[in-house]
Length: 466
Image 1 (cartoon, one colour):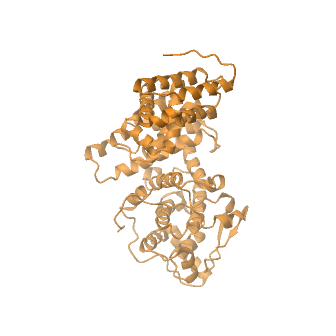
Image 2 (cartoon, one colour):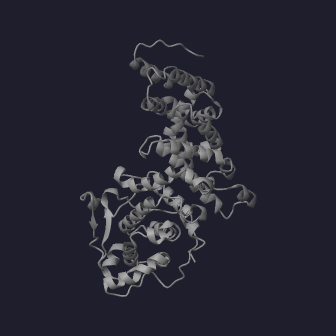
Image 3 (cartoon, helix red, strand yellow):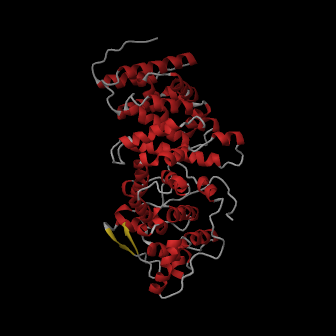
């Protein structure tokens, strides 16, 4: 039953909304009536008393904290999910998506229920069809898809629903936006592409994947960048910019979004058609970021150190950095790699005991031809013979991609940093000498753009690399 409301001011709106979500319901029919009243009331006054995203979120909080929801959580959640599956009106979709996003960020079970009810294909459809439904709705749908995809494995049949047009649509949005990576509409689009790439990586390398599905399952993100990368350079610029700026703009940044970037970088640097997708200057920024982060990783971050080294090798060996005119910081890289596997006391204090996988991965990096050319010069400068890495087999392992794909971190886990407090006392460009590392290691970095290091934990046990 619908009611007509006559309101004189904003406070009356919020008082009436409190009454609607506080009604005592003893049957599913009464709950449905209350939810219909909630949606009708909020959509009717959108634009009058609800003028921005904060107002929409406040409405969602009212429902989330209501006695109606407290008494019937699962039923309310499921009904709102059904509403998102069935409704076509943009205003109603906005309030439905807002509630699910807010609830899902606090309760992963909501996101899991969305997956069970088959919401993923619907979100794909809405994101493409609702571009003209308002930036607020479109951004919320993107954020909802991202949150749903980052906390669980998506079903293969859902991933197969992603087509080239969907990925192109997102890349075109990024190209059409401003160059400001902090644009509130910018980051949600980029994050969806990153999390879909992770889903492809994990599913494609699942040993239990049916061969019929494997034929249909194609990483659309890498495919489009391989075929049309020159048309979508802004995306490449921004993922490196995001990785580089994380610690500067997000002192309490999470690990998982940064890890998503590393996973895509690994695939792009190991796929021949995307070896030279990035601009050379952006690759140089990435080298600086990786040097800083490898030095900054805590002793406990062994798994993450391996991930950085797995990305570093193809970055140096496959991209345009391999050309003489593009070589960059070869001495600094060699010094870093030497220190990472040095058995000297001061190096051990910084990096701890060196495990065999680190030695093997460092050896792989050192064997990049243009780095080897500078090794002799560095030996003369240091006045000693360098033994970097190990004599173990250093060719790229077939398990590297499995290791990279498997590394995950739960949403909300903040990135640890060995030198965060020390760095806060410095500003601008300067030479940073890590006093815990001897052998004359001195690496020039820009502290104003230092990135917090990452701490990774794998949910899967992967056989030791061979």
